[in-house]
Each structure stands twice: as structure tokens, then as C-alpha cells.
Amino acid sequence: MKATTTATSQTTPPGTGASRWSLLGGERFYTFARWLTILLLFPVTQFLSNERVWPVTTASSPMVILLWAYIGFSLLATVALFIPGTASILDLAYLIDLMFISLMAFFGGEQVVIFFPLYLLPLINAAIRQPPAVSLLSGIVAAVFYMAAFIGWRRVLAQDAVLTLLDYVALGLRGLTLTFVPWITSGLAERWAENNRQSVVEARRQAQQALTEARAYRDQMRSLYEVAYTLSTTVDYRQVLDATLRESRRLVAFNIGFVLLSSGQPDELYVAASQSLSVSDQTRRVKVGRGLAAALRSPEPCVVPDVSQEPDLQSFDSLKSCRSASLIPLRANLRTYGLMVVASGEAGAFSGEQIENLTALANYAIIALHNAQLIFDLKEERSKLISKEEVVRHQLARDLHDGPAQAVAAITMNVEFIKRLLERDPRRVLEELDKLSGLAKRTTYEIRTMLFELRPLVLETQGLKVTLEQYLERFQGNSAGVAILLDADGAASVQLETKTEGTLFNIIQEAMNNALKHAKAKTVWVRLRREGRNLIAVVQDDGIGFDMQAVMRTYEKRGSFGLLNIDERARLVGGNAEIQSVPGNGTTVTIIVPIEP
Image (cartoon, rainbow, N blue to C red):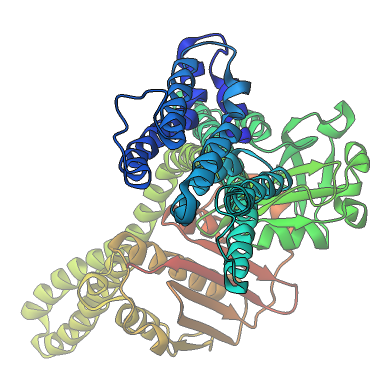
């Protein structure tokens, strides 16, 4: 009760009537119970005194006079409820209740047991608001009053009454009951109040936790909105990276953050955006070591518990004061663009939820990088298409001129020659017609081969496997003596999008042409296999190979859709390609494309 009173007084101004009325809620209930007790005492008093309780006179029995005196006290206690400053007096009113009940029990004579239950109401009322020790003292006082009334009546008013041992045992049990009932009640009330206090504390803690989570969710949504807004209003991926780091810092407390992207050189990264990174570190380029390589290959973020044990990160002077870091890979489809690195001066600074928030924001950066790469690729591809279109036209014109056009001209000349033979030497006509038929067949074959290489119709009707079988069959028994082996059983049931299928065939065709023209190989292998939701195509030869670094250095001067454009074509259909070649050890081209779901 005291704890409840204190809590209420903190929330309601103490001087107001409503506050005081609320504080006296227990007294109001007890006052109501007291009046119910008085109503019960009316018939009890009339029965025990054997006289009317009204009107009261000087000749009335002591019990009647005590009843009306008790009524007067109850009226005063009721009026005191409305008078400020009487709360402390009302707290002690239960002692007067015990005194009145004891006097009435004294004059009640042999029926003193009737008044025993009436002791419980004031005792329990007091016990609820008192500590166990005080409640025990109140119970002892009530027991003394009751036992005094019982023994006093027999010693003063009924000296002839005989008390047996059973009477004293019963009296002792009732005295013990009055002693321990308030003590037990106070203990239970105190435990109940403590449970209530703990429940209130737990409720407040849960409310505070819910409020904290709501604020964190609000901050997360605001950060996601800011980055998304930046992404929607600009095509500059650097602005998106800056916004990503800035908003990440609002969600997760870190000391230093930066984004590493590929510089275009093998195994080299550069700082594309940063937060709190020193000027010297902002221009730093990093060679990919074992730690960063593992993070770049992993699809999931990784935590570095001790930055000092990571040589790749220790190359940054700004990170030497940090203890832990989190590396979030920036990946889209099968392509890795770089890493987002956040570091803290505290050990174990990044929880699972914080890493999830960082990953969510990093996804927007990935979209920006992916869009920037697509825009760059489209511009590059458009430029190349425009610059190479004329080359392709000239190449097609040369192929038509050197092949079908020459053959058609020869056919025309042979026809004219046969017409003259009909007049001069008819016996040679059949021989020349046979030659003309062979020339026409070769011309038809050349034209169909050109059409097949441009866009094989069988690719749309029977699929990639059958198309490759027919295409590679044309190279069997070639003059160079190259053996061509196809292993496509693992991809017989694979379904690809039309654009993806055509692009993959063109890539394999380009790789085959390079192998046959330049590799000087004895054997060329073409393999198709399925791995999960990807189709992997491999074109491998045992030829002379080439120096990848040397070719890369002269790549811009090549001016053709050669071997190194294979990866660009693969990325246009959501895949990627890798070329491995060592002088003297052949060349392997690996193409990975997604399978249609």
C-alpha cells in the first residue's frame, strides 16, 4: 500500500482533492466495511442484551451504550475522510476499533466467541498497510485485548463461572490466530506489492525496449529512404556510396568506414568513398591479400575480430587505432564490385542485427554500382558497335565476294561455256554439267554455312546441344587435323532464354574460331554442364596459348570483337566469363550463364 501511495503521489499533484481522495481509497473501503459491521452488531447487541437498542437511556445496558458510542466514532471517522490532514489519524483508527470490539466482547459474557471474527477486519486492514513486524505487534495487541476481555468477564462479572482446560486451550488458539493472521497477511501483501513493483518495472522495461526498437526501426527506415532517394535522383554511384556510409553511421556506431572498388588492375582495390578516413588513406590503393580475397569471394558479410591481425587492413594508417571491423561484399548476380569496410575502436562492436542493417544499406550501393556498370557497358558496347559496324560490313562483303559471289560468277561462265559446247562438242556437255553441279553444291554449302554462323535456325527449334553438334560437325576432318570433342550430355535438358542461348552460342563460336585460327591445337574440347541454376560452358584447347598480361596491355588497340570481349557479352545476359591461358599450355574459356527458372 505504501508503494502504491508513493507511486500515485508522483503522478498526481498532492494538493488536489482528487489526489487525496484516491490516496484514501483503502480507508473508504474500510469505512464502508465498518458500517456493515455496525449493522451486524445491531441484532447481536439486541440478542445479547435482551433489550431494544433504541432509544438509548442511562438505564441501557453497557453493550447498547458501547454500540452507540461506536456509531459516534464511526461518524467521526467518516467525516474525517473529507478533512485534509487526517490521514495519519485514520491509520490508527483500527486500534479504537479493536478497543470497542474488546469492550463489547467483555460485556458479551459467555457469547464472547461471537466477537472473535470481528477482530479480523481491522487487523487485516492494518496489516495490508503495515510491515510484517508492526502487523505482528498489532496482532499481539488484539490477542491481549481479546484474552483480557475473556478472562476479565469471568474474573469480574462472572466469578462463579468454571473454566476448564479446554476453554484455555481454545482461548490460546484464538489468541495465536489473532497474533499471526495480520503478520501472515502483511507478508503476503508485501510480497504481492513487490511482485506488482517488479511487474511495473518489467512493464516499463519492455515499454522502453519497444520504444527503443521502434526508434531504431524508424531510423533504419529513414536511412533506407535517404539512400533510396539519393539512388533515385542521381546516376552517380559515388553519391550513393557517400550516402550509404553516412546513413550507416547513423544506424551503427563505427569510427571509420570506406568502400573499396576494383581499380581495373589485377588484384588491386582503391578507396571510392569514405567516412573519417585520413587524406593519405583516401588515395591509397590496396593489393588483395588472403583476407580481402576471402571476403570478396564470400556472399555473406564477415567480421574481423582483431584488425591488427589482418595485414590488408593494417596498410591503412587510420585503422591502426581500431580493434574490430566488418567487411560487407558488394555483389550483384555473379559479379563482385568491391567491399564496404566499417571499423570500430571497440572489440566485438558489431552484432548480427547491426550487420543486417549495414547489409541492407549496402544493397542500395550494389544497385548503384550495378547500374553504373550497366551504363558504362552500354556506352562501351554502343561505341564499339558503331565503330565496328563498318568493319563487319566490309568483312561480310569480302566473305560474299571471295566466296558465293566468285562461285556464282564461275557458274555463270560455265553455263555460257556449256551453251557453246552444245554447238561445237556435245559429247563434253555431260562432263561440264557434272562440274557445274559440283560447283553449285559447294556454293550452296558455303551460303548455308554463312547463314548458320550468322543465326542458326536449328538453335530456335532444337536447342543449344543439337546446334553445337551440327556446328562442330562442319569442322570434322578439317585440313589442319584438329580433333574436336563435344561433351554436352549434362546440359541436354537445360532451358535458356532465347537471348541467352544465342549469346552463348556466339561466344562458343568465337572461342572455337580463335582456337582453330590461332591456337595451333591438336584437340579442342567443348563441354557443357549444369551446376545449380547456372549453365557452365568450357572451350579448351591444347595449343600454344598466349600471354594474358601482354594482350591486356594492347587491348584498346586491338579493334575487334576478339577473345577478350567474351566476358562483356556474357555480362549482357547476366553471366560472366573467364579466360585462362599460359604460353605453351593452351587456352581455357569458361562461360557461366543463368538458367531460365
